[in-house]
Length: 132
Image 1 (tube, rainbow, N blue to C red):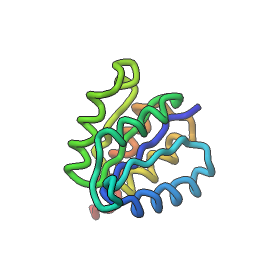
Image 2 (image 1 turned 90 degrees about the horizontal axis):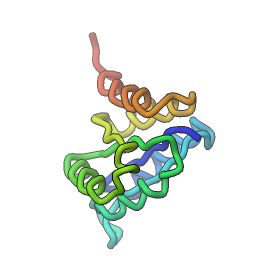
Image 3 (image 1 turned 135 degrees about the vertical axis):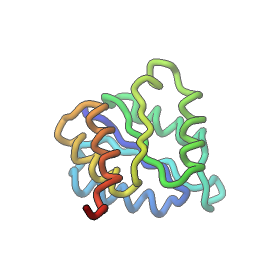
């Protein structure tokens, strides 16, 4: 298996669209999950949904979590606290832009790279659009 990616967004539509785009690029070679939107269908994030999505990827070689906004980071951090220690050790929260980070991480994961390499590639996407 490879490293899995979890897309966390306040918007379910945004996360589902990104998942579709990422999956098209990696053609199913990377486990993907989404935790997005509020229970009522509106905007928001939910730590319980994030924890459940991480658990759905437990068979992967680790999980990189990409988040869209600050409160999504807080929800993801709360979700990590709810996970069993063995799983929590194989989860990384990426300090990366959601779209660019997800695309870069997915390509790296599809190459069979390990958890730390996938995380580093996602985080390197922060600089992808900067002019030198």
